[in-house]
Image (cartoon, rainbow, N blue to C red; front, top):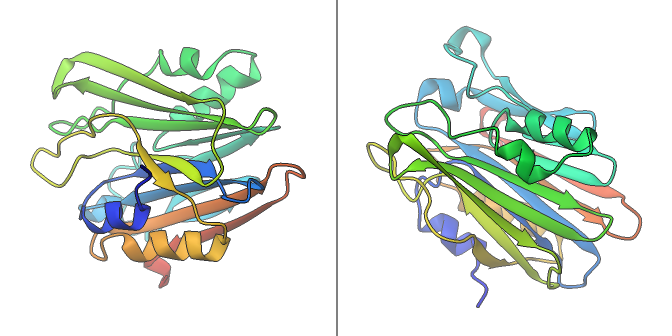
Length: 236
């Protein structure tokens, strides 16, 4: 049974970064959402900006940015009918592999979790293929918090059902260290209305920890899209 994404988010004050992908109930659009959260000043000092067909992370106040290596990246890039969305610089790895005719899985088999002890934040990634209306999700994690091992999980949805999507995030909940996400992606319901879909996600994220949200509806037949960006640092 599909869960309500609002309820999942409201019940978890720190899911970290999250990706949701699905098809609207009318079967007309692919829905995408990607959000970031943060506990440190460095993580919270970010905004999303448009970058061609995709988006970039950018420091809100450059003077407060202490280490850009894991917080400044392109979360979304577009290659023809393919849309890549991730929580790190593996976006570029996937993009380059796809451009060379290789696969999502091949790209991520070259990557691991983030080098940020003691959390070893998982790398979560999604790939939408508009040509055949399918999508993939992946999470790369340490072996139960042990950085000597890496576990790579892949989830394929080749025939999405209208009104249903899937949601994956980096952290199971808040903690110290923060426990990594476990299990399969959540099966979630998708709303037909783009504004409702977007605003409900933004309002459901924890007010203290949320940073930015990107949402997009892509019409399956025409390829035309509508996008929204919410940045807490800009008053959203």
